[in-house]
Every structure is written in C-alpha cells, then in structure tokens.
Image (tube, rainbow, N blue to C red; front, side):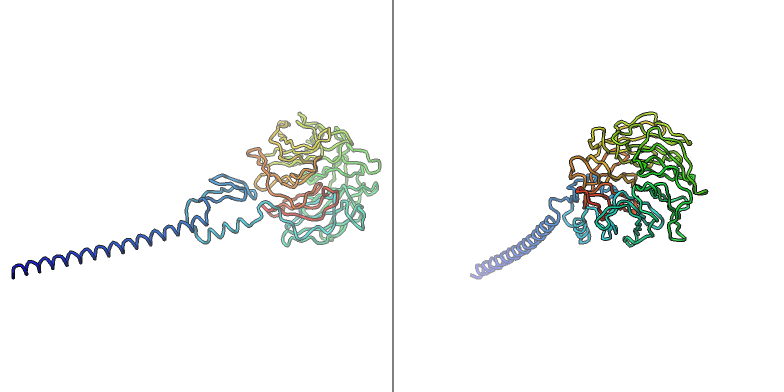
Length: 449
C-alpha cells in the first residue's frame, strides 16, 4: 500500500510538472505569435503609407519624365530620378508638392505693363538693370501716330515710369547707347523732315537735344550699330519722302557730332538685320527686302568696305531673326520666302569662311519674331506670325548650340509679333508688339531663367 501510494504520488508529481511546463511553453508561443503579428501589421501599415505617398516608386516631373531621364527646364539641366524608397521625410515630400504647383510651362505676366500700346519701337538696355523704350506707333486718342513718348523699366521694382520725351515723334527709329554709357542716340522717322534729324539724350541734363548736324540722308526702318571704335554705322532703310529703299550708309562720329557717308550697299534694303561680329568692327547684314523683291545675298561691312559674302544663304528670307552665338557664329532663323511662305528653317553663318550651314528646323514656322541669346549660350525664340496663325506661336523654343537642336518650352500668355525681347537680370522681358487681330499690345511677360 505504502509503496503503491508512494509510486502514485511520484507519478502525480511528475504529471503535474509536465502539465506546468507545457502551459508555460504554450504561453510563450502565444506571446511570440502576438509579437510577430504586431510587427507584421506595422510593416504592412508602413508599406501602405509609403506607397500612398509614392505611387509605383517613382516621381515624374511636369513633362512625365521618369527613370533618370534628363530634361532642360529654366535653361539649366537637371535629372528627374526615380526614387525607390518607400518612406520619405516630410521635407522631401513638401518640396515635391511645392514643385508640382509651380507653373513650369508658363511665362509670368508682368503686373506692370507699358504705359502705352506700341509697335515699331526700339528698346535698349542701359545701366542698373533698366530698359528704355521710345517712339514707335502708339495708340493715342484712338489714333496711331508717331510718338515722342519714352518710358523706362526698372528690373528691381519691375515697374515702368515716365522718361523725358524726345523733341519729335518718331517711328521706324533706332536707339543706340553710345560708348560713354551715358548718351543715347535716336535716329529716324516717318516724317520726311524729321527723318533727317537726330537727337541725343544727355543724362546730366535729363533732356533730349537735337544733334547740330543733320544726317546726309533721311531714313526710317534702317539699322544703327555701335562699333568698338565708338562710331555708329547707319545702314539702308527707307526714304520717307519718296518711300524708296536706300543703299546709302553713313557713320555717326560722336567726337565731332557729325555724319559721314560710308559707301553704298551692293543691294538697297530696309527692315533688315545687322549683326556686329566678334572683331567689333565688321557688320553682317542679312534679310530685309526691296519692296516685293527679296534681298538674297548677305553683305558684310569690313575694313570700311562693303562686299557680298563669299557664299549665299541656303534659304532666301526676309523678316527673319538672327543672333550672335558665343563661338562667333551667327544663328539665322525663320522669316518669309519668295512665295510668302513662313519658314521654320535655320542656318548658321561662319564668319571665317563666310559660309552657311543648315541646322535643325524650329518646331514652329515664324516671322517677325525675336531671338535672344541666354547666359547659358542657348537661344530663346519668342512669338512671331505665320500664314496659318498657328497656335504653336504661343510656345517659345530653345536652341542648344551644342546639340544643334530645338526644344519647345514655356507658353506665352498672349501671342504677339513685332514685339521686343531683352535679356535683363537673369530674365527675358517680352514687351509690346501686335496681336493676331492687329491690335497694339502693351502687356509685358517675363521669362525667368
């Protein structure tokens, strides 16, 4: 009995110990299972939050570019890189949202417009980030006469303010900042008498004065180019009294306030383009017309003598645009051909060999538009008109001289032609001109770089 009891007692104790151990093991597994479940839930929650912020692990820019593709925006190169991480900091997410709300494809409409609707006016850059506009055809009292009115733009406060008026109204005129960086020369008019006169703005007196000596030939729609010797080369144009196209050229010499005849062009022309070449003394003349006849062969003023370029342009054109590149070559684009077709073709003039080479066409055919060289070396094409009144004229284009390719960029708020575009303080200011319904424009837009 006692042995049996002892044996049963031993079995009971061992059985109770085994059951206790099993209970503790099961409780340990339950705790571990709960912990694993919590961890899994946290991981799943993190993944859900991550994927809701970053759809498909990538971020595309406004043009839909992803996966390390490179795009050009605001005239600088950057990469839009796919991000594979599932968690981003608040700062990164905030920056992405701010970038997405920026109007990357729009020029900025200036709050400060020209004081007058203008067309056929010149604009020049003067010191301290200011632009001067004078004359042209202005909308004044319901009419569009020549105006003597001037106004100046400050890039610091982005406002236009009044500037002393010229002595007479002028359109088809030129403004030239002389080499002293203080005096401004105004030449040309549609009026057959005022077309012979010239005016100088004196900054110390804050007033315009007539140049004592008149020009040898009255003219309008000419060009006036400041050379590095301080003299101004005045070329071609139209005589307002007979509306005949001129071949005459003359020099304005500031030291004596006189105008000296400087030979004739090989072909008379007006509304042409003059480009000062890198030597500072040679001037390339392209485009322009003699009434309905196209000016075809470009001419060069070099060492005081006029001559045709050794080779003709690839495409005969007028109302084109041209700009000097950093490498000394000249980019020539757009215009109108002999059949009045608007052109998208582009060519490069090389002064050393006096040859023309084709490059990629613009996306949009344009005439009466502007080309502006940017600090990056790229060239911005803005506005213009064509026979189709194409909507693409609102889209600006960038030319890259390294790749010789064009890329469409931001869109104008208002389509315009015969406007002006000037580089000033890391922006291109686009001002005035005419709209497609032939109204004079006074708004300004700013293309920030």
